Length: 304
Ligand SMILES: NC(=O)c1ccc[n+]([C@@H]2O[C@H](COP(=O)([O-])OP(=O)(O)OC[C@H]3O[C@@H](n4cnc5c(N)ncnc54)[C@H](O)[C@@H]3O)[C@@H](O)[C@H]2O)c1
Ligand SMILES: O=C(O)C(=O)C[C@]1(C(=O)O)C=C[C@@H](O)C=C1
Image 1: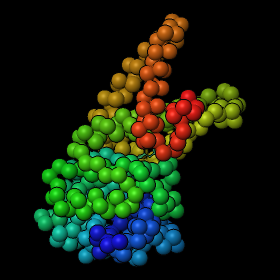
Image 2 (image 1 turned 45 degrees about the vertical axis):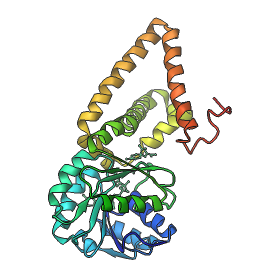
Image 3 (image 1 turned 135 degrees about the horizontal axis):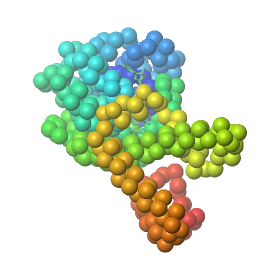
């Protein structure tokens, strides 16, 4: 296939950047991939996996003559990276990012993007609890959404970036940054906080139950432990940068939790049954719409 870009600079060489490079290779893109990471250790690991054509020491060096620049660092590090690369960006280039929060990243990055360079923020809705250059894999984005922020975007640059993500396996949708942050607060950020909390509670109980919580953990709790193993820096930055939307959803969550707590205390089985029936319908709707590729037969007349 034709490479939509000639030189792609990856700033940060962790799970997402590594997976992007591997997916670019799988798609047969001929673009030169130049990568950089903050630590010598990460750069050495990326060299070992050889998913970049070149690994360089500074971000300024990496973006030279790149027509696509991908910021794949934690959300809290975006401002400093943007300030470093701003003066070195090629006119006509596109800068994008993969951060899990969008409004704060725009506020931090946009002031450093010179006129004549396109800035189109993005967010692939795909990941795992693992991080670092050894965790990437080419299939990560297959059939996953990649959300691009279209506020003020140049239509041609937007189409070009969308084509790039489609070649990596993703389904592309556009939306504005505030909407993105509200949706992700519900679907990703608050659920992560709940998982972190549940595992923290279990760890406290472990001292009382002599490790039985871990030993006899059932599937639901194991899923929580996977999520709660996610990178602490990444998730600290998510919550500090999507504060308002996350706090709003947490408020609603707490109200619902109190209502369920009351129903349990009062023995109100009708309330519990009606609630769980409603949530089961939501799950089935997701599966029937083909949006959970991990559960091929769930809800389609198979398990319930
Ligand atoms: N992990 C996920 O599930 C996931 C999914 C979608 C989007 N994201 C977003 O993608 C971005 C990267 O996440 P990841 O999972 O690839 O992380 P990662 O920890 O695997 O990789 C991050 C990279 O950034 C570098 N880095 C860290 N701090 C830095 C700093 N202060 N300055 C410069 N470089 C720094 C690290 O060396 C590493 O190379 C984050 O913004 C995250 O919110 C993550
Ligand atoms: O599967 C996981 O490990 C994830 O949590 C991935 C996940 C998500 O919440 O879905 C996490 C953060 C991202 O910004 C995008 C994807």
